[in-house]
Length: 121
Image (cartoon, rainbow, N blue to C red; front, side, top):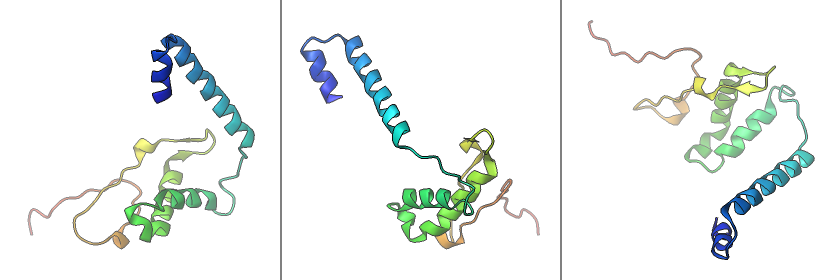
């Protein structure tokens, strides 16, 4: 954005700057397509999905539990994924926190969680 501001200051039209960004984006996508390799996510019990989740969790507060949370994340994604269409509806995954306990108590719940206090003995 700093470079775009400099280009505008020297008199380039904003549409030319925007076109440059579009061209750069197309070049980046082409390069990523060229160097990418397709993997079978189902291979080896979805190990690549777990590795991707562990990479994402590596620098987070939960890094001590990253293997456990990576397994939970992998299973949650597989629960809602349409593998034929290569689509995952992340709106169907919710993380709920509960006061008390520790991170090691975390678990994947398939379905609906009802958190209701007992109102009558």
